[in-house]
Length: 382
Image (tube, rainbow, N blue to C red; front, side, top):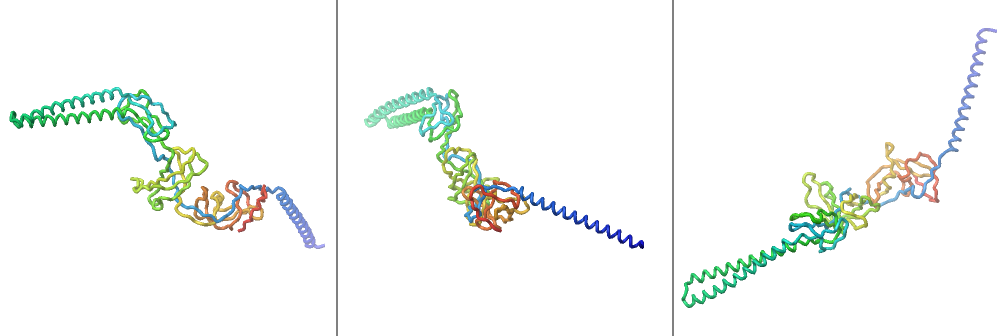
C-alpha cells in the first residue's frame, strides 16, 4: 500500500472521531439547557398581589398649583401686660388653662393706688372749697362795685380768683380720675377667650409697666402664613383652596386663601399669603403645614406618582398583562393633587390598565402574577 493512502485513511478516521465527539458534546449541551429550562419553569416565582397592591390608569381631574408651607397661627392672640407697676398677686392660671373674655387673671398690689385715689379725692374737695370762697368774694365785690364802695379793679381781681379756683378744681378732678384709672388697672383681665399658651411671670414678683404676664391663644380660628416667590404670587388669588398636610396629623385638612399681602418682603422679595384652615381636633399654633395651592385643573390619564419607577434610564411602570409583569416605558406629564395624593399624568399605557402600586417595589419582568382575591384585573395592553 502506498504511503499517501495510509495518511489519507488516518486523516479520515480522525475527522470521523472529531465529528462524533462534537455531536456528542452538542447533544449533551442541548440536553443540559432543556433540563435547566424545565427546572427554571418548575422554580419560577409566582407574585401574589392583593387589591391594595395594584392601581388602575384612569382619566382624572388633576388639581395643579403652588407648593406652600408654613406654620399655623391663631387669628386671635393676646398678651396680658401689667398696666401699673407693683407686686403681682393672685396669678393661678397655667399653660393649657381655659379662660373667658373678661375673666380676672391676676392683680397688682393696690395699696399704693388706693392711697393715691384718696389723696386725689381730698385734693379735689379742697379745690371745691376754694371755689366756694372765691365765689362769695366775687358776689360781695360785685355788690360793692354796684354801690360805688370799691373800684372795678377789685372786682376783676375777684373774677380772676374765681376762675383760678375753678381751674384748680377741674385739675384735681382729672387727677382723681387718673388715680381711679390706675386703681382699676391693678386688676388684670383676659381680653379674649382662649387657652393660656405661656405664663411669663410668677406670683409675688414685682412687675414693671408693660411687663408680660400671660399669652392667650384662641384656637377656634387658625390660619397658615405661607411665603411664595414673586413670580408665583401672581397666580395666588383670594378664594383659592389648598389641601394641607399638618405635622403629626394623618388626615389632610383644607385651607382657603383669605388675604394676600400687598407688599413683598424686603430682601427676599417673597409675598405672604394667608389661608384660613378648617378647624380640626388636635390642631395647635406653631404646627408645620405643607400642601399645594390649587391654581388650575387638568384632565388626563394619571396614576399615583410612586407607581412610576425611575431606576432605569427612562421612567416605566410595572404593567400587569396576561398575568405577567411587563415593564412599560411611559412619558410623564404634569403633576397634581387628587384627594390629597400626588398624581402624575402619563402617556404610553391604555386607560383601565392595571399597574403595580409603588408600595410593592420592583418586580422582575416576566414574573407570573396571582391575585390573592378574585380581583379580575383588566389586562392592560401596550
